[in-house]
Image (tube, rainbow, N blue to C red; front, side):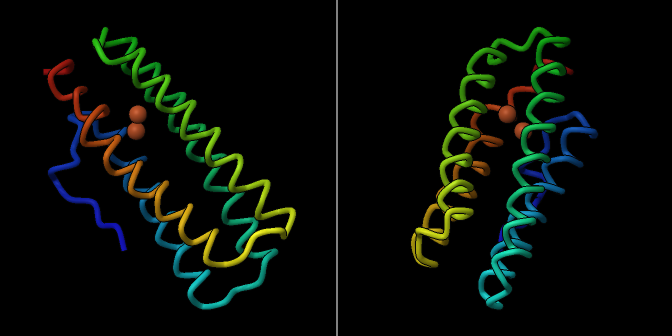
Length: 130
Ligand SMILES: [Fe+2]
Ligand SMILES: [Fe+2]
């Protein structure tokens, strides 16, 4: 389970709320997999997670541009990489040609990426807004 704590704070409350929300969605999906929920239900969760991540990335990119954050371009590139990888997982999942272990492993990597991305890139917002 991924828990948000102050070490992940970016200094922009709106962005922090979205990060918390995303972590919750990640946790909910993992929990649903563990509980053996059906493919339709978990597929919808994955669908929403993809939508919300994309929406968050757009908001955050605008925010970094507004504050002229030096990592704005790197942030945008990283978001694209995440969405591409997530899109692959989503397609595999919808096509039902992948087993539980593969989905769980890929999903875990994406979660890890997300936390590392907040710490390594999004975190720079702190220095831009202060
Ligand atoms: Fe980001
Ligand atoms: Fe972010």
